[in-house]
Structure formats: structure tokens, C-alpha cells
Image (cartoon, rainbow, N blue to C red; front, side):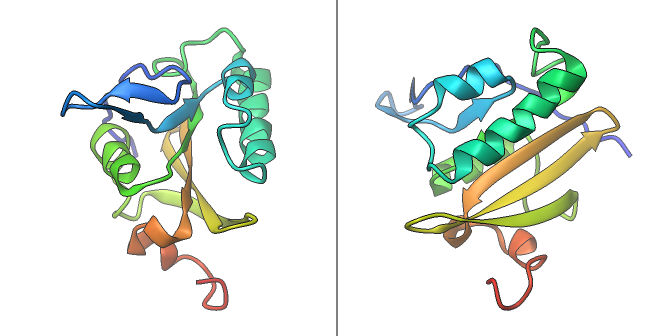
Length: 148
């Protein structure tokens, strides 16, 4: 099964101009170890090693110099707010469907995150880390009752 997706280039950064003309925090994205290292300190300390492990596997398997948006492999997205969830849903993958492969829990100091993996085709996947309190119900339903 293939999922038709369009990608926008989003280099690791914490600011961009939103449509209302104001600068604000953006959805964080990394597809390589180099990009993930640029985000260190900008993501929760407990999320960073998990995301770094994923992009390390992607680099080892698909190459560190690949175009993370258009070549095989994939990337990691780290959402922090409802706007990030909306951006993911509009730009990358529907979070309310049943297209995710697995949902895992990452406990952080101040809140609990989930890591949802979406396999978009045989050679491209997106891992999305998001706080549990803003995660769509379709993803939360995959978690054991004692975790929700």
C-alpha cells in the first residue's frame, strides 16, 4: 500500500514565519544524525536519544547525504503543540487514520510523549514524537489502558 504524500523542505530550526506574519516555534524535523545533532537541547532530553537512534539507523541504511524528503529512508518529527499536529496532518501524514505501524511511550520528566511510526511505503517512514496530551485519539487507542 502506498500513501501519496507531498513534502516540504524543513531544515532543522526552531523558528519560521507563520502565515500570520509572526515568528514562532516550528515543528522540529531531522532526517540525519547531523540534523538531529543541530536539535540537541531543543527537544526533551529523553526524546533526543530515541530520535538520534532512529536517524542513525536511517543514515547507516540509506546514507547520510540523502535528500530526506525525496529519497528512501524517512525522518523524525517532534511536535510540541496543536499547531504542530495540524502541520503534520496537513503536510505529511494523517494522524487520525489507521496507517501507523506502532505507537510507543516515552516518559519524560514533565510529560509523557508517544512515538508513532508511519510506514509510508516499503522504504520510507516517519517517526512522530508528540506529547500524549495532544495526541489524536486514534493513536492513543493503541496504547495499553494503564498507560493512557
